[in-house]
Image 1 (cartoon, rainbow, N blue to C red):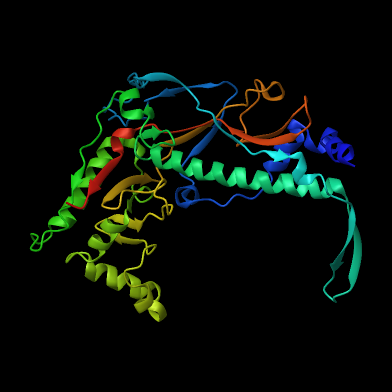
Image 2: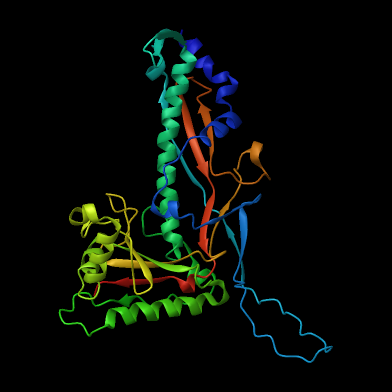
Amino acid sequence: MPDTIMNIFDGDAFSHVSMTAAANRIVRVPKMLGRLNLFEVDRITTPDVAISMAKGRLNLIPTTERGAPLPSATPDKQQLRIVRTPRVAKQSTLYAHEIGNLRAYEDAVYDVQNRPTRIAVSELDQVANIILARQIKLQADLEFTMEYHRLGAVQGKLLDSDGSRVIYDWFAELGVAQPAEIDFDLDNASPAKGALRQKCIALTQAVRKALDGLWIDGYSYLLALTGDAFWGAFTSHVEVDPTYGVFVKSVDQMNALQNWGLPGQSFPFAGIRWDNYAGSTDNKVAVGTDKVIFIPVNVPGLYRLALAPSEFFPYINTPGKDFYSLLVRDLERGSWVKPEIYSYPLHYCTAPEALNRGRMT
């Protein structure tokens, strides 16, 4: 029977291509930035991607006499960088002793009228379910990592999982200066009237100028994602509190008292949409508690995700997938199999000079 169990992995269901196809059908739970669908996806066929700084600047058209030659459009000057997509990969080990006692059995499935139907559950079915559970866990870790990469991209720097090693500093890569961190002075007990609103308006104006012709009036907007302490200080600020209170009551009058001051109540103030970023409990994927980051949204081509193909033979020179899954076997001893997941994503912002950040004080 142990040989029979291990022979299951010889079937087509556990081939490299079959497992990748199955894994890509698993529904993934998106995170906060994932739900915004900020990133336009480029499925490339090579490990490297060329990133340009062409921003589609608007140019004034001079007046001309009827019949006169027309001025020609000049191509934008571009700063081009060739960068390698990083690899994100993880494995899980399923040992032989964990499935050595599996036996085929019958189970009952009940219809809407509670009538049972007997079905056979084979060793293959049980092993497939175990492998699927391992895949789902690996995929959840991958999606967690993808949100981490998205969060890095909207701040202009891609960091490794340790939070310190810089993989790509897009300000340096694209030769632009990172905007200075803004002090919102939220601890000021007697702030000047209208000072906070004017600071927000000036920030939006600076972002629009940095984006040049990419910003679309009436469509593009600025999203502020705050840390927990910043959110509390901001929503209770003397300028913001009345606006926030009216907004909460207007969107949910029945639960106004319950929702007052709670995170996740996105609201507009001074032309900016504000929200408390729902980070992870371990703070690995989070906005600093006393920080805020500003993300231009609905700006065509601003954020991109390049997906490169897998490094394995079946996928060489093919368009990159969201991720790849395979099963590695212990061919020498037959003591384990290892579900593995791979992805080759590169999240980046094409105009990082438009990415701003701030602090409470």
